[in-house]
Length: 75
Image 1 (cartoon, rainbow, N blue to C red):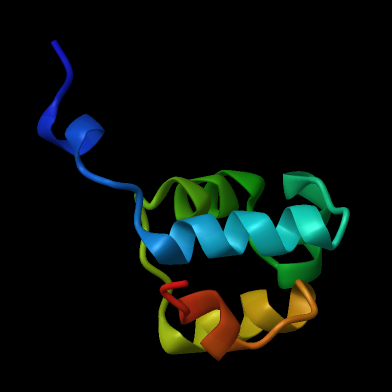
Image 2: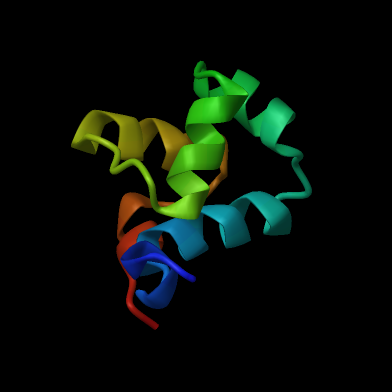
């Protein structure tokens, strides 16, 4: 039986981080290295299991060649 988390829509931030990484042509390993974090933490961000601090959001955006506002967009 699926858990409550499985029934909830994936957070848009998580989707946007993954989409930006893929658009930049990076694997999780390469992106994590550029951000300065472990691949497991990036994976958790992309699954919506972790929420980045504002500082971390900026670091992710710079590494993925985008902006924090683009990562936070709902569209």
